[in-house]
Figure 1 (tube, helix red, strand yellow):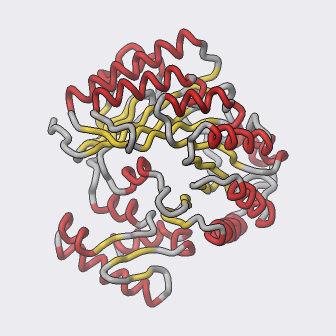
Figure 2: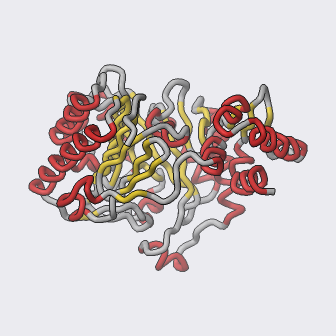
Figure 3: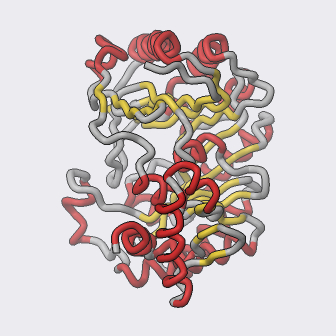
Length: 377
């Protein structure tokens, strides 16, 4: 395999939860103990080394996702950060180091320990500021507990805090969604992710969805547009379909995904993209612990084809730039896509400016249709 010469991102999947949320389709397990946490930490460090031996490279972002990564505790997270920093020559003074956490797991002591261990960005799963909605989602925290978690992070010196909110959840309307957006913005966070609820097959919520008042598609679109407008009024600029940030606080790690930059993912169900190759670990904690990177699977589809490039770039407010598209895929492809974009421009579905195609928030809602037209029709 080709050695990676640029800066990569490192994703660490921590598949442990206190309990499974009713809507969650991510790979996670409940009921782990300290012995398993220690063994898992060692397994992650083992695979960090194995990946570097094969692909090389430096790194400038680490992202702990889950699951509930904060359950590992500050000491184990710091051990993984230290291991990654040594192997991948990471400058911890400038790198972005993110840990996801559920608000009910964050204490003053944890926040201080995370900061001391190198964490400089905390992502909290608020989801809603409505207690009833939180209960229906199976969340363990209250809005007040989320507020205290943010305060703990800020007091510990983690100045870059992000919160997730969900749109289209049970019992939500435009008014309650805006209330949640305002609650989140009032916390003093630098970044908010606003994701639409997906009722995934196999989750408890999917099996019970007929029991709840889940907003329809038109209402969810209305909720989305109003929340986007409200967050931008609060100074949080939309830089991606679901992500808003104060200027300079965009998530550098997630931008690597959308810009098709190299990243490795370690842990069960984690994915990686190096060059034109994509890899993934099976959804099995046991297999990861026993085999590590030897259990990796190679995806059949190559990374970075034109469909993926257009889809990912149009998620971003920056959109697609003609010079870059021409350089990667050729002038003929670029001119064909821009010619089709001009047809959509007349319908107000896209914007074209200075050799750039991009979508506004209404365009984001129909982005799949726009992408299909640009590529295939």
